[in-house]
Image (cartoon, rainbow, N blue to C red; front, side, top):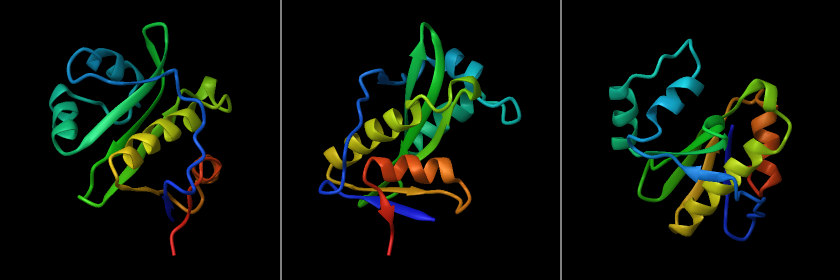
Amino acid sequence: MILVCSKEDFTPAPFDRVRWLGRDGDLERIKDFWPAEYPLTDKDWLTALDEGYRYGAIFDGDRIIAIGAEYRCSPREWEVVRVRTDRARRKRGYAKALVSFLTCDILGHHRVAVCETRDDNTAMIRTAKSVGYRVAE
């Protein structure tokens, strides 16, 4: 399913706890949060950034508790991707804050904000719709 959000439809949620992740300084924290079944190497991280991914995260102290990225997939569209919240911290609005933060940045750069997810990913669909995304026609 592809969802899109325009400036006219966007209803931002508070995202004051979200910050961009640095190229080098946050790498160990990211590795600690990254799913164990998909180990993240230094090279993977730098390659993703070079390919157009930009990550934001919410922290509890020095520990990442939620993460998401924008992917600059084309000159016209940037996509909200890889949104994930620590299992023990779900249903507290962290994903909504991340999606809002990323969408605000995308729209601020005069791009179309898109989010592609599986049809059965109801949590992501609900989160995206809560800030103004709608199913693409």
